[in-house]
Length: 305
Image (cartoon, rainbow, N blue to C red; front, top):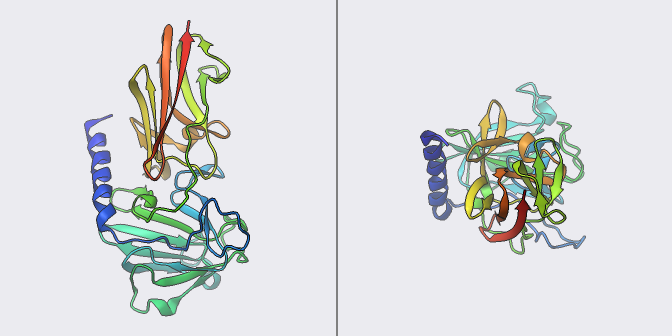
């Protein structure tokens, strides 16, 4: 990685660490426990986590499933854009996000609230909002106006650093969710240059060469980062604390930047990095770190001939 790229990423991470204790923020909708299966719950749940695969794209924020719910300002700020798609018919600009509010916050950050069923204009006559102010509503019966959301999706929420052109994983600065689904490493897979995929649960002897490494991926269990070690050496770390914007597309950061087409190249699997395996015994360890910064590991010993 170039010196400037390292400096850029470290600067953003340092800024996020500073923001965590200082930034007063809350979830834009009331959340139920991800483990709750009660049909009577009146709280929202997360349908797509930050960085997950959503119909061929990274999710640059969070997408919720909700009953009819209030939408709250996630932090203090000023509303700088309102698009009421039901009345404007996209005359302002075409948007697949439907009715949308954008709130500006300090340090050139903005939050975006979209697929709204109603905008509460009377809640922000002067445009200024505080954390927890009701600014809109969402409803499961609302079909949306952009054609991008399905019937199980209500609010779509993003936090963006406009200066650095990155979408921020707002879970880092939001209150922790109780009983969050745990993130496990899953099984590991190696794909050779010919496209053949080997499960390390089934194959412990493989020819030497270059391989792409993948893990099992389960919806709702997105990691904050993944790290692969081969014989004790870190050969790849991919971070999901932010998604960088490049040429109009989001990319995950690591020793290099990875587009969606690389991270989710295989169905139900997540790319971890590339490695050249040489003859002899090789120890491959995967560490996954979840949004609450808990680490879990899995290790394989394989013979390379």
